[in-house]
Length: 296
Image: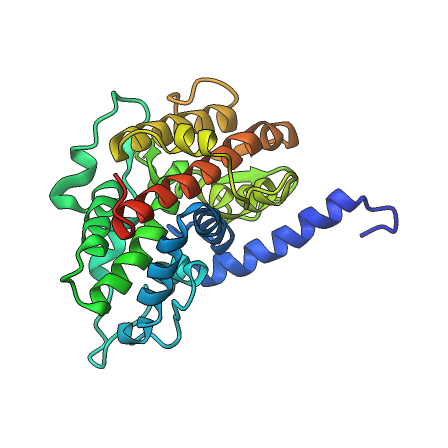
């Protein structure tokens, strides 16, 4: 390291160190905390006041989840709860939440026509689970525990759907099998998925202006419009763009042994990442209002 190192380079190294720590501690398919918490915070600033009251009331019972090492006391904590509980096991060593592993993504091939059916067999995909958890959350007859869990799952899964490599891939486990360099940073374990989960998300969300704010009503209506299937298609299209930039051309050609993402590539993808996070937050706000405040 030289005394003349730029602020940008210093920041990249700081992010790289954090990424290595996260790679060692986090599941490969997890949209890292910053992305999920930002989606949740945007939603919180854009829901109705009565929705906030309902969220506080539901999360006040989060102790019923019996996951003291993974609290869900706020909407931000709830946003990362479904990843936090993945390693938890019962007294017999059986995974407590293994049934939900496949709910975090839907690997729809970007090189074929958009089709959710194969990716969502038996309801085991993120878009189906968004609708399922929304319905449980809206059901006043459901138990307090079930509604707290549904709230955490819903907040988390809307974030997952808006990480494009949770919505589209090339048969490479959402880019987990696509080794990649992030500018000058390229440890062997880094891949296209982890770049979108953490490094690119951190850079894009941290850039000004801030994403967490109250958006004008017209903006909320425009960006939250559509169905969950529409949102899935948009994220799948964003995944196509992610591969195209990383491969510097046609994304459906064979993936090279290691992708080389340049600084220019990273800058080009920042607006897309910011847009996805913003959409995720405003769409989550719409779903929460509908479930908890009787919205359409």
